[in-house]
Image 1 (tube, rainbow, N blue to C red):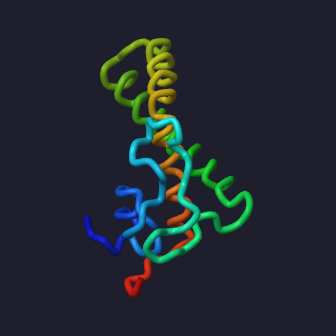
Image 2 (tube, rainbow, N blue to C red; image 1 turned 135 degrees about the vertical axis):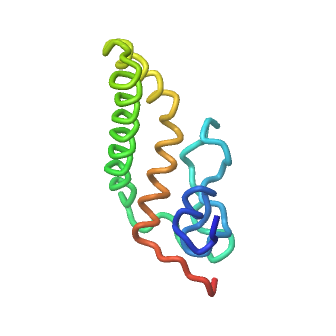
Length: 122
């Protein structure tokens, strides 16, 4: 993946400014401290917590991701494979619980990448 794109930072859990320092303390989204972030980048020293409550906006990104997952699952299960709606609903619930840590991390990375521009000089 090309290093100077926002997708590189999101996909690899890297600092949005330099794309070198790690964003989260743990690599796995299924670790008990899955949502803990470093205070600042280990390479460029950019602060990850821009202000108090900055990541409340990531809830909107998370909502969009969850709606996208639900619509894709609905199209696949109900419209294409003609599976019962009740089975779809239970499947959706199970998938959302399993993907919760991943969605939380990705939504934070997407949200901070909306506001921080990549700086190739860092």
